Length: 52
Image 1: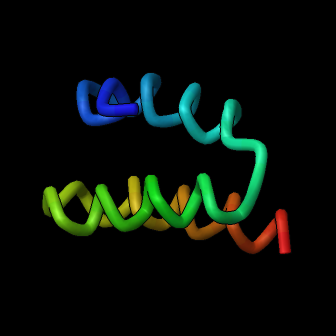
Image 2: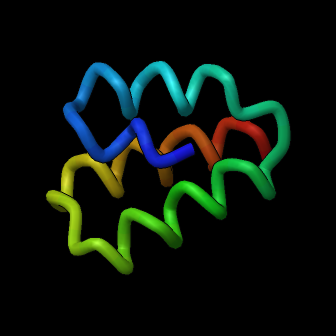
C-alpha cells in the first residue's frame, strides 16, 4: 500500500480501504517514517480513533 504517498486523495482512499485498526496503524507508521505532512498523520489518527 505505497500509493497513499502520492497525494492526499490517495491517502483518503487507503484509509477508507483499511478494515482494521492494525491496517491504519501500519499506514500511520509508514507516514511517520516517510515524514509525511502532519495533517496526513492527523487524518490517520482520526480514523484510528473512530475504529477503537
